[in-house]
Each structure stands twice: as structure tokens, then as C-alpha cells.
Amino acid sequence: MHAGITGEDVIAEETGALPGSADEAAQPFAALRLGFGRARLVVAVPSAWIDVTRMADLADVARDMFRRTRRRLRVATKYERLTRSFFAQSRLRDYRIVPSAGATEAAPATGLADIIVDITTTGATLAANHLKTLSDGEMLASQASLFVTPSARAPFGPRALAALREIIDRADARRAAKGLSVIDAALPAADTAKTEETALMSGHRKKLEALGCTGIEAFTRVMGSARGETNPMIKLRAECPDARIYAVAHYLTSNGAQEVRVQALDAVYRAQGTTFPGVLRRITGR
Image (cartoon, rainbow, N blue to C red; front, top):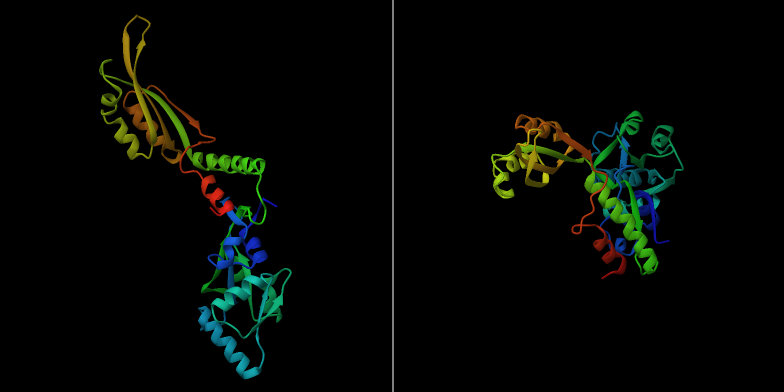
């Protein structure tokens, strides 16, 4: 398979590769993080374990438990591969995995396990089951992502690459446009001889930039009146953050604009700073 959308925790558990590990480079990678389905994979222990706040404390508990009772610390989880990798990094050895297919957070209360490794979003379910996360017990932060397989494992032909590029470019364009709108307005100009740059030096550009607007364009245009008089105007167009639209409109109408038109952006395609070239390098390894 060339690509697919799933949670980062799912791929990490399937491959057994924690973020930053040597094995990660050869595995499917997140070409685009999609911004939804956010969660964290964490180590959680009973809240009553007040002296256990770090992984080092948990390792001490596991070691002492095994020394005194010959029983290993029981860890309920469905993320067995990631748990073993993370615990090895944390030098926690005296434990055993208790496979969990669901309701993992209830395992300590029911006596099936001592601690858990599970996914959480707000932490509310953990707290409801009298569990707490360790300060350094977060294994990974996960969200829904577009995963792509390196070419060494799934060779890409021209059609597959073209399709992947279109998907990524479309997503880039939608992300670039998020929270932006285009404003159009006409402001009175002192005379028609002013060049574009001179007109902008009136202070409008600086004010719009201070309000977060970009891509500011302006030109002087002579508009006719019903009585044949000329009416020089500065036509302005800019991309502005949605959160500042009212402030922009208020400024422009206070400076002579009769109306300010606002149009939400659906997509902004750019030649530079796009995601696909980096994805292509990861795919090909070059």
C-alpha cells in the first residue's frame, strides 16, 4: 500500500517504532498531520501512589515488588510493542504485559493489572478511574495523519506519485487558506498622479500589516461621477486574518472607504514552501 489515513499510534504500534528511533526511517511516515483525532499514549498509575511521579520511580516500585514477592508489575495495554520499547528506554524490566482489548483504564480497579498504558485525550477518564499520568510517561502524541510508505517497500510509479502530489497540494492549499479572507476596498486619493508606492506610503500599508494582513496590493484608479467629475481612488486588496476583519473594515471605513468587501478563501496554492518536495525525498531516500 502506498498511502492511507490512520492514527499515529496505530502505525507506531504496528511497526514498534517510537518517534526518533532508528527503526522509524524505514517505516510508513506521516506526510500530513490532519489536525483531528488528537490523543496521547501515556503510562498511568493509581493516584494513591503518591510517591510515584516519574518513570524512574515506577522502575523502583517494579524492582522492589519483584524482590519482595517474586511477582512482576502487571501492565494492562493493547500497545504491547510500544510499551516494551518505551520501558526498555526507561530501564524498567520487572513487569509483564496483560493484554487488554478494551476498558483498559478499569484494569487496576478490578485487580487485573497494577498500572496501564493507554491512549487519552483530556485525561478525564483516567481521573474518573483514580489514575494519574507520570510526568515523563508520555510515549507519543498522536493524531490522524496521511501515512506514506517509502519507495523501498512500495515502489511508486508516475501515476501514484501524481495522485499523491495532488492530495498533498490540495491539503496544503486548504491549510494555507484556513482563517484567511480577502478584503477589497476603495479609498480616496489626493490626486491621480500618485504612483502605487506613493499612495501606499499614506500609511494604509503599515496599518494593514500591523493588523496582520499580507499580500497587500494597491493601485490608483480614476472613477467618474454622474456629473462628469473625476474621483481618484486607491483600490486596495489584501489577505487578512478572519479574527481581524472587523478591525480592518473599521479602519478602512473610517478613512473614506464606502464599503469593504470580504470573501473567505477556500484554498491558496503556492509555488514555494509546500510539503510535497520533502515527502518525495522521504519516499525515494534521496
